[in-house]
Structure formats: C-alpha cells, structure tokens
Amino acid sequence: MRQRRPSPITPASQVVVEDPAIWARRGPAPQMPQSHRHDDLELNYVVQGRLKYLFGGDRLLVEAGEIALFWASTPHRLIDDETAPAGKNYWVHIPLSTVFSWGLPAEHLRELLKSRPIVLPVEATGREVEPMFSSWVTDLTGGATEQCALLEIQALVQRLLFYFLEHGHEPQPEARASHPNNDGMQHIVEMAQYTVANFRSDITPADIAKATHLNPNYAMTLFRETVGTTLGAYLTRCRMAEAQRLLLTTGMTTSEIAHAAGFGSQSSFYAHFTRSCQVSPSAYRHGARGENHLQDAYTDGHRTVCLPSSEPVAS
Image (cartoon, rainbow, N blue to C red; front, side, top):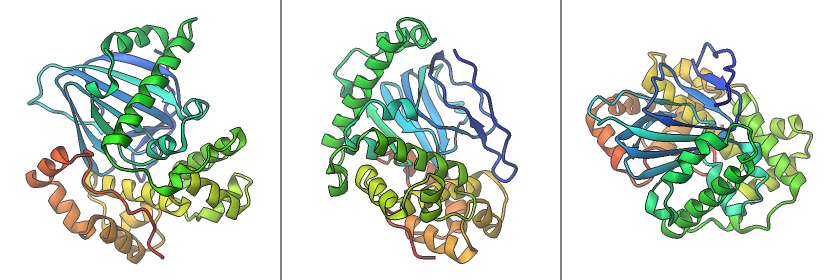
C-alpha cells in the first residue's frame, strides 16, 4: 500500500485531509477516531459483516454483498458496530484526476461528483468481483500490472453506474450534454478541488472561476452541463455536508457551525438547512441522535437521509 500523508487537521472541523493516492487494501474495518476526506473515488466491497459510516452528517450502512461507490471529498469516518459479525472488506482509492482521464460519459461524472454514496448489490456488476478486488491489492502498488488493474476498476465503475442510472433514476437533461474535451475536464477537476479545499471560506462561484483562471459564465456553464448541477449548488452541498457532520459530532452552537461550514450568516445557514432537510438544525441534531433516525438512514434507498437541494437558496 502506498503511504498517505495527512495534512494538518483543521481546528474548526477536526477533519484529516489526505493526499490522493492509488491503493487497495483488504481486511477488517480499521479504527477511525476522526473523520477524513481525500480527493479520490472510493470503492468499498463488503464480503462479510458490514461497514457503518458517518458520512457528512448522515449514517451509511454497507451490508455484506454490497459495493459502495463515492467521491471521498465529503468527510467520512467508520464508526464502531459491536453488533456486526467479523468483517471481510476491500477498499480501493483512485484519485479523481485519474478518474477524469477515463473519459466517462457526462451522466456518469455527474453521479460521481454528487455528495452522496451509491450503494448497490454486487450482482449489479454481472461479474465475480472478489477475485478482482483481491488481485488489485497486489496490482495497485506501482508494478507492471497496475494499468491492468486500473482498466478493470474503470470497467467495474462504469458497470455500477450504468446499473444505477437504469434502475435508480433518469439523468437530468443537463447530464446528456456532449462530453467536454480534455481541457474542459481539467477545468472541472480544478473547480471541484478548489471548492472542496475552500468551501469554509467566504467564496462564491465567481471566486471559484477566478481561482481556476476561467471566465465565470464559461465556468458555470461548463460545470452545470457536465456535472448536472450548478457550481453554486455544489458549493452549498459541500457546506451542508460539513454542517451536518458538525451537528452530529460536536457540541458547537448553530452560530458556530454556520461560520465553520462557510455560510455567510446564521440566517443563511438556517434557510439552506431547513430547505434541504425539512427540519431546523437543532431538530436535526436531536433527531439524528435517536434510534428512529438511524433506522431511517439505514433503510433509505440511497443510504442517506438528507441531501441538499439541487439549487442554492439566495443568501
């Protein structure tokens, strides 16, 4: 396994930011005392037992025989599950920059860039996947077979996304746009990376475009047509995931959370939150710590219970 170098922990959020890296591992769930995030596509395959995550502000349960697929920019942490049997799991991390080089269809990219995981039964792949995951543990170490492993992973990811789009929901019209060229895809990567690194600051979509040396109108159009959501909505989604996590894992006040998650004011935070979750931040905190919320989270079809709306609320 390649060594990952943690960046300094942000005091306000206590999230370890890890450098992207290609790697795979096999074994029981590791202990995670705090959340982390990284600019990778992450695959989890549970062969035996189950994995219980705190993903942003929601709970995520991946059962035996399921594969979870998500962009790991949302803070996440494995949490203890004393009731689970001994686990056998696989983890694979592929840097988002590598994923963008695959030339995936626009509707696939849109799903990968959403701040929520896709959890599907292994049967969705139509393949015997455990031997592949097992071989990737050895292959993804920089040897001669690494490229073979990456091609296999790309094919598996596309099979999962084709299955999800066919059985989950229809892609939005924006996602059917023509696939952008290499320069366009690089711009999208840069905008997404900048947003994830700076959403806690007082930035706007225009600031993101400027930081990535793009005309704001061009940047926003490119992002919307490829990802299927606006750059402003994506920025809000990052802030919402952080706010949900802080509500569940800290004793910070809602005013402190509004500031730490990047909302310009407490009133703006409240408006975004209630529109997305249909409850106030304090009600969400109270309900999320109860058994009813946990059961709802584990039985929901997409494994998350509160997703930000596709469009941001005006501040």
